[in-house]
Image (tube, helix red, strand yellow):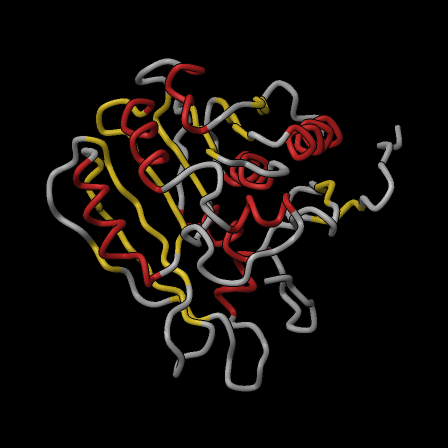
Length: 254
């Protein structure tokens, strides 16, 4: 049965297990950060995972494709995005594996209950207030700026939602690392693993992948840097592997 698309929507191939996702360029299309986070995270066989601010559901779908987790949930405040996520879940026949809930991150613990998840992932808004260019498109602005939730909101609710020794995975910007590390510790989510992502080997990193553990011991592993582009402008082998691609001519959206 053909999935019905609304005007300006499209179906994009996720390059894994035949899964596709409904996207609308006028709202917010997933980028490289979501794919890298799905590769950095891990959901074990008996664990339930929650994605905070799931947008159109890219992370729950990728996580379900890659890991043997028990169940996946996405929380999204924008009903239009949540609707697209639900239709993508249905399109891929994943209704028994993935739930999409419309709700506010600031109320996540009340929605799901304390200690409900073994894993939390989040690809949150990176910009504080009006830092950076303000996009006139409301959906894009909410996705990129801390308009509806802050880093504190995410960490506070995650600390409540996670089971003891549960894991927290986030992709963010390196310029906020001091704040991220300080606040993770303050909320009882101990930083355990970090990996910086560099667009080119001779450029500054533009993304950071972080794993934390609720109630974990103080010890953090810094992994080797992830380089996106080779000198000739093609994607590195590791990056292509994360996308499930093997041809450098494939164009990926950042």
